[in-house]
Length: 168
Image (tube, rainbow, N blue to C red):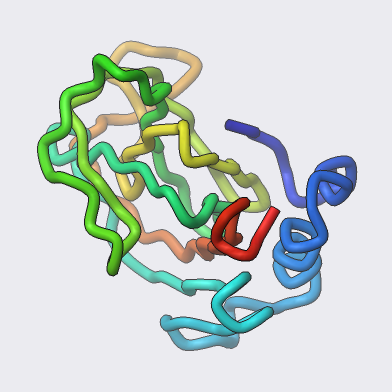
């Protein structure tokens, strides 16, 4: 998992031409003028999902991981918490891998990242993540707010194919 800002993401471009294409797309696009939906960058090898939603309480977290794609999750407006844990052989599967949707769900516990405008997190296939959650932990000065308070978010998830899927 990588946590950074788009403004400082240039060093990650060297990891793969497809990752670089995804970061370039994020840097040159005004997402406030796009409708939610899928936008192809390099056919099925790199594409963006523009999303607008209201965050959910952490109690509704769905821990997921992918095999064919890594995620660049980029916050345009709003704030959201995303859970993160490493996938291990001992991680309990709650919904088996669906190749068509490229997702499996897990029972996991991890740590919480709070992202705001301009920030991004990159999740590899070995990273379990729980996105779309309301930020904040009551009484936590570093993450103020009530995790039950929803907020509006404009987020872009860039899907980048990984090795074996025509990618990295």
